[in-house]
Structures are given as C-alpha cells and as structure tokens.
Length: 374
Length: 252
Image (cartoon, rainbow over the protein chains, first blue to last red):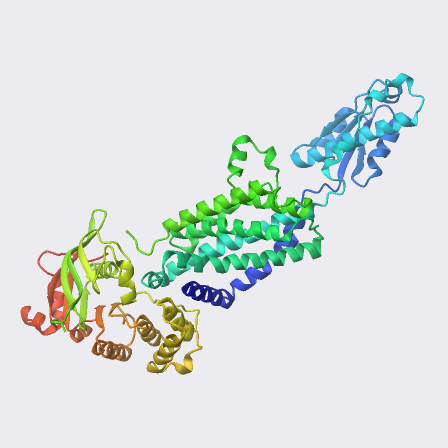
C-alpha cells in the first residue's frame, strides 16, 4: 500500500510538472465543451421551402401561413411547375419542395383527403427526417384546425382525416441540443484522459528506459498497475466534476437524477478505459504507436457510441459492436440519470455490463503486464 | 575476493531469441565483495546475460543463482537483494534529486526514519545537499551517473549490477565513479560491471571477456595479460575478439 502511494505521488509530481501537459488537461475540456457542444449539433434552425401552389385558394394560403408561422420554415421560392420545384431541390436552393394540388380546398371541404406532395432533400438524412416530420405535423395540425374552423364539415367524413398529432412532437420542439450533447462530450473528455494519458505514461517510461529500473525493484504487478492507473483515475474524475459544474452553469443542463450515481458509473467506466490504456501500453514500444492505437479505438468508440447517431438506426452488425462499446453505455447512463432522472435500478443493466468489462479488461491488461520478458 | 562465498553462479546459462543464440551456455562464479568485470564487444551478449541475472529476462536454459536465489523461480527475491544501474539513464529527469532518491528508497520498502537518514547520507556523500531540489535534467551527466549509482545502492543490496555505468562521461568523472565503486566493494558489496573501457577492466578483481555469446576468457587482469602475452588489457581484448574464428560476427 505504501509503495502504491509513493508511485502515485511520483506520478502526480510528474503530471503537474509537465508544462506542456497541464494546459492540455485543464484547457482542453473547456474548449471541447464550448466548441463541441455547439458544433456537434444537429439542430435544424432553418428549412428553406419551395412552394408550388396549384390551388391558389384560401385554404392553400392558410396552409402556407401555418408552415411559416414558426421560425423554422422560410419560403424561398414559389414555383409555377413541379419541375421548377424539383430543380430548386437539385440545385440546393431549397431543402423541401411542397406541391399543393388543384382542388385542394374543395377536396378538403368534401372530406376527400387531398394529397400534398412533400419532397425532401435527403442528402443529410437526419435533417431530412426532421424536416419531414415537422411538415407532417404542421400539415396535420392545419388539417385539424381547418376542419374545426369550417364547423359545417359534411357528415364527419373530414373528421376522419384529422389524426391526433401530439405524438408526432417527440423531436423536441425547442431542440435544445446542447443539453443532449453535453453528457456525451463529458464522456469523451474523461475517455481521452484515460486512454491517452495513462497509456502514454507507461510507454514513455519504456522509451526513457526508466521502466527497466522499476522492473528490477520489488514493485509487484498490483502495485505497479494501481500506482500507474489511480492518478489518472482521480484526474479523470476531477475533470468530470469540473465538466459537470461547467455544463450546469453554462448550458443549464438539468440534473434530475443522482450526481453520485453519475460518478459511480464514471468510476467503473474509467477502470475499463484505463485498463485499455494499460493494455495498449503493454503491446506498444513507442508513444507514437500507442497514440495511433488509442486514436483508432477512440474514433470507433465515439462514432459508434450513439452520441451523434442513434444506435437503434445502425445496421444489426454495428449494433452488436456497439454492445461492446463502453462509451455507449456511459453516455446512455449519464443522459438517463441527468436528463430523465433515472435511479440506480433503472440503469442496473448498464452498470453490470460496465462492471463486467472493467473486470475483464483489467484482468487482461494485468496478465499482459510483466516485469520480465521471455 | 574470489575465495569468499559465491553470490553469483551461472551454469551453462543460455538465452536464445528464435534461431539466434545471444548467450551460449556461459558458466562462471562471482564471490562476495568481488569487483567482477564483464567485457565484450557490442552484441557479444553482455547485456543479455546481465538482464537474465537481474530477472528482467527469462533464460532459455541452464542454471543461475544470485544472492542464493534461483534466477528461474525466485527472481522477486533476487530483486530485493540487488541494485541495478542500466545502460540507459534510469532516474527521472522531471523529478528533483531528492524526489528521485526518495521514490526509489520507498519502492525498496525503506521506512520513513531510515528513508530520511538514507536520503541525507546519499546527498551528503555526493555533495548534492545544496542541489536536492534541482531537477535531474539540470544536473551534469557525471553527477547524474553518480546519483544513479547511489540510488541503486539505497537499500544496501548484496550485489549491484552496473551496465556500462561510465558511458559518455569525462575521465575525471570516470575516476570518481570508480572510487565510489571501490568504496562500495570495501563495504562488502559485490560489483558486477560491464564496460567498454579497457583501463577500467584493469580496476576489476577478475574479468570475463565474452565473444559471440560465450565466455572466451576469465581471469584476473594480470593473469589474462600473462596468458595472452599482452602488454595491456586492450591487447588482450583485441586478440580475443579478433580471434581465429569470429570474423565480423560481433556486430548487432
């Protein structure tokens, strides 16, 4: 135990004496939180609309007004033909082309469900999905209002077309993406500390040759691993505290659930990441090699974590890979605890999986960590 | 000297890396308090042999004992009783003199009182007390080497292994270094040292010269010079290394 404390002391002395590293550890998180939370953002702020109104009736005008009533849609062009609308899309002058058919008003009054054609530029699939569902919602809303307005709707035929819309608003009207993104960025932050700094630290000792000196001392495997990983475990948890205060103050992220639970989950998660860093250090000889491997793993972890794209919309094989991705679990845990107020019982399954990974990877790294070479 | 109890014994100790035999069945014994010089050209297998004796490398075959423990099965016991100063500089450049000594002392399990006294003694002996809070990176190489030596001895090991300890330092520092080695040997510590400098070989009680993974000669410096009818150890070395069979194999 005493040996471990002395190793930890040595590591902290070295970390805090490193003039290049300090800013990276403390400034990086602020920049990441500020920049990434705002930049890594899918919020749809403005959708450009091309309208081809073939009906030119009171109802078609009302529909257009309905669409632009919010700040989201903006009519950038009024086409005379369907062709023109399509060109607008092709040339990227508009994001959505809307065609209101002839007899729109008449069919509506007669309860015949006129068909409004909506073409969406789906190059950005995510934005397209959002646009499409907004329009659908607004059209239905218009539908209901219009039918209600003309109380003299004939024999309930029109009423059948009025579908309940409230359920369509699961896309979050206000779209406060920073609140959704912040937990993910926090995870990325502590992952970088764990994966890069810890792994690099051991490889650095290999490069400078000091590891030889440690290997001829009576330091045993457990002392070495604990002494090497605990400083970064503490550092990453410190960084998490810092990040939590930051997202609360700056983004006003709601803390609905237990903060202790978030830290408990992060503590387990960090064992997985730090062990992975240790594992990388056992298979590499230079910091450069370690950096490349860590980077490779990091990119896959983050892209497949559900942070940017929902895991549910990935293909099956990718979903199976995501089940082995610790980043995905922690992001899910933090989102659910902070934003939805989940309790330990609600995220028990994720906690168990993370604990299992922690034990497994630590064991693997521990077995590979040797004082002597064959 | 050599007639004392044997603290290092090697019997047909061998290390193979794939098809390459780095150390080929070497056998020798080192007595307590002896200064044992371990010579050889680059790539002759010196460092490999030393790494096996210090428990850093698993031997392929043969037998070896250090401080009464078996190299194959008791390397952790060996580690408590040996000091090691590697060829590559082994202290932390970004720690101060004091922090380095304290760290290694603590790692060897010295308790607070002993540790404090030890650190004080080491710093005084090296005349580094005034520089205790200096970062190691700022010390001249000669001082670093002497500090590394003292640090390797902080836990009073029975044997200390020095792998080319005087590489790259000036002649005066080398002399000071060897004075430290002598002092330590007089206190009863066994010194196992590899070197490239033939004048240093003269300072050793006995010298072994490795050629192509084998021990080609082992005797006192005087005995070697007689055997090979050479004026200096330099001549002995050249004659052995450029011996009849080994043409250019020494590299690597």
